[in-house]
Length: 360
Image 1 (spheres, rainbow, N blue to C red):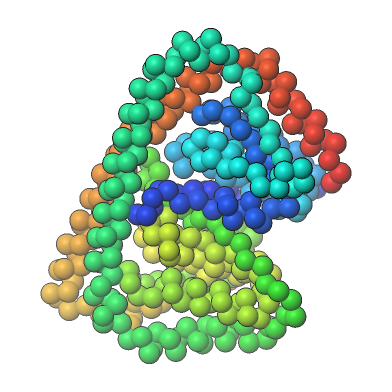
Image 2: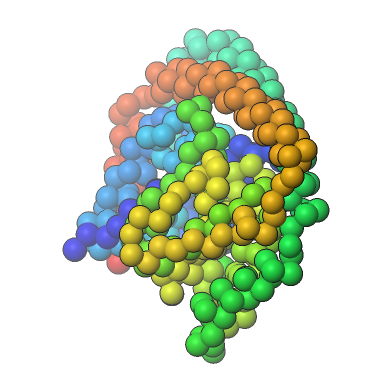
């Protein structure tokens, strides 16, 4: 019997820099394989094959996609036995902590041909410096976009009917949690809802919720308390012993976009742009807080102007990311030209042999 695949992002380009949840995922896992190599596309196929190995044995897995290249994987997590295979080098570097026990390093560095690396070394250095400049521009623009988004929030923060909002929230909490009180410690996990990519804002909401029975779509404006309410929702779930998964925002890494309760098969989700969805199946419902704030004509003109400025910054950031992505693609392709294929396959085969010998 085959397991299921859930698609995720492991990192995002936010208004506060590059955000990732891999440290949290390392902490969640029982066993972590840190896969070391220079920049490459070739590890993606290794992660894919490792995932298929466990999938065919009935395990549910998570594939973590590179935000720059939709089809490229940078990690695979086997949920049933909590085993993580992680690209632990470029663009993010991770080091094992528990040597000799639950952390293990697998290195592909020896699979690279030194003569070929020297041949392309000057070009790679120049291209790397160029790519870093475009990434810096992109992140600066995302920071500006976040600042403008904060302006967008202000009219709603000031004018919201918070008492009515809190009353509706309490009714939801009572509806979800009234009959639950588990005598156990709740587990908290972390994921990313989505991120800006070279093709614009993307998320994996459909994959995340394909088997979820109850989906609660929050409809509200920026600054209308959605993230704060979801954090309260998660805290309430944990207080009664329910496991929670927090999905962090791809613009503001201090905000969350969803809370998932796996034991109840329930998700509370910020269904506003750029990840706006509508109910489409049984078990879907809307939690609407838009009614708690109506703008007057002057306020609406201000909000429209701020929104236009925000959208322009996101457009510019996307263009910068496209250039950075092209540079990164060139770097990885050039590095892959420097691989000794025989040595690479030898290391790959040792990984496949290792997982075949693991008692499942």
